[in-house]
Length: 180
Image (cartoon, rainbow, N blue to C red; front, side):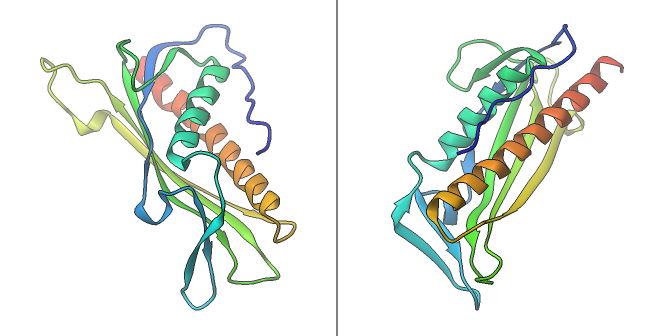
C-alpha cells in the first residue's frame, strides 16, 4: 500500500463538529478477503491464493478514520464503537474493488466507494433527509504489470485519492452548514 498520510488543514481552527465513522459495508461480490478479477466475456473470478491481509470493510473504515484525524478539519473523529456523542455519522459502502483484466495490455484496478454523511437527529428534532449528503467516488488506476504487488499498490493509490476528495467534500459540505 502507498503512504496513506494526509496533509493537515491549513485552517488553525477545526470545524466545531464531531464525526463518528460507522463500519463500512461491502457489496456481496467483494466482501471477502480474496482478490476479485474481472475477466473478458463478462466473467468474474476470485483468487483464493492472493488476498488482502484484512477485510476490505475494516481497511476502508480504519483508513477513513486515520485520514480524517490527520486532516484536523473537525474537532473530533471517532469510530462506531466509541461512546462519544457525534454531530454527524459517516457511512461508507464499498461498491466495487477488483482488478480489471478484460484487456491484458491495459490492466487496471477499480475502486468504487459510496459515502453518506448523516446529521445526528435527536428524537425531539425528528428526521429530515435534507440534512443527509451522499457521494460516490470511483478511481480507476492503471497497473504497471500483472504482479499482485502492483494491484495492491494501485488500489492503495485509488483509496488515497478517494479519501483526499472525501475530506475536501466533507469540509465544504459541513462548512456550508455554518453559514446557514
